[in-house]
Length: 229
Image (cartoon, rainbow, N blue to C red; front, side, top):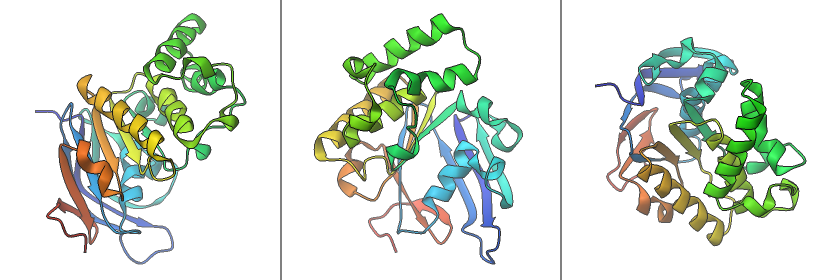
């Protein structure tokens, strides 16, 4: 059986460090599953996210061992544009992902870089803005949006690439309760569409939508038993 996302004996040490932050991570995530990852600050959750989406080893260098498989293909052997069509990530701070002066330009950026036809890009912009409930902001500036609205635009940018796997790296940590509700509703919608979702979380109130919870401890993942340390 091929899993959408599979990690095998993954180890990683940043350049200049003497200690591995990932020490043999193993993980299999099923199609249509919401997996939540928890752990103490600095335990390696974000590093794992970087490995899952290819930032490590393609952008950030270090001592990398093991495998990350996306639909059975090694992420280290794929190019970043190829990974982006399979897996997308929404980061903790939406301002690190949004840079265009107009919302529709933000969403168009990814498809344009994949040389998708202009008419198709316009169609995708309309579709994903409707999906996240942000149609009326199409010609507005991301700078005037609330934190939750910015996260919805960041998610729309990922959706425009027709990805099947979504990583939410503490994506609800800097937004208000209304924004959290919107993001959680979108995650549940994605699950219902058969998408594969990994949520990195520190707020346990956000874990109610997870099918499974795992904890990062001592550089490995273990089933969560209610204890972080």
